[in-house]
Image (tube, rainbow, N blue to C red; front, side, top):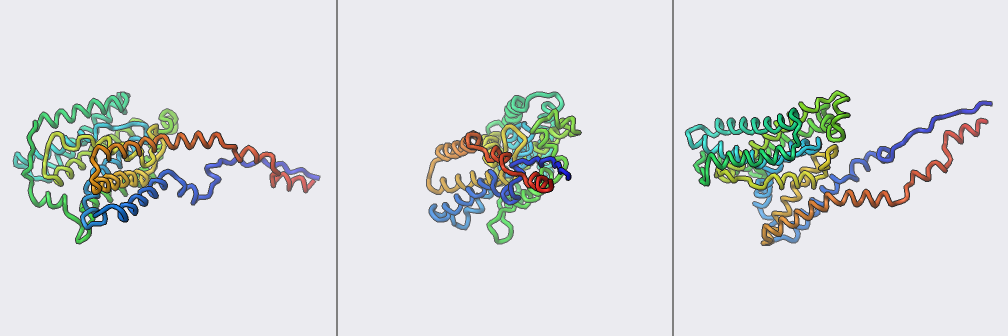
Length: 356
């Protein structure tokens, strides 16, 4: 007679769900479905939303936010934040205008503007990653610093005399389609950031830092270097967005892109990234940017004022932050199925009993 003893398998409810459920029943999927629903509703009910130019202007409007949302997603997943992105856009816009007005070609001036964005990101990254200052305080300070430099360089004037070829490039489309050319560099960057965040050891380090930076350090993640790289990327991509913004509107001003940092952060949080770090996916963030863009475009076509649009987007953002907590609280109040599991017969135990 023998008695078989088997150690009960330890299971986790989140991983015991089927793969399709883990991929589809997520907050990111909910944002994508909501975006598709808003698009379908707008196509059916909003006058001129299905017009030939709506898609072009919609993508051109959200292009700077799409660009900056890529590095901002990684920054927020680490538990940090960068409020200076719009000021870096303004500074790169002014540098592009001033240097081009001084006789420099647009590509050379754009390259220097990108370098300026890199320097801005390096300043943020050094103070946060190596000095250890809080990112909220640092980037509030550099928000004012970079904007002040931009306004100081150009004053209240605007430079509008850009080479027509580059201005046309910023507003052009891919062939005869309605897709703006700016979507090409965005697609390249999006693929790069997806690989970086979701398919690399660097990306796993980003999530680990967001969950617990001390634990991440002891598992071999170089926390300071990772944060430094992310703020460098945030600075240079923000400068790229500022160059596009300037060429699209044909105007370099110190107050260009004022307030864009809030739109970027709103889209990132709406897309499912936790403000506390450690959670988020890029496809949800991109859907969040498109959702805000479609809502703004549809409300504008309905002659709704910008203030009302901002209120609606703000309420959506607040709901997206509060709803997970409410659902979590409601879930904790429900009776758990797992509590009933030990009372039931275990197959391995039954088999062992049958052998006795």
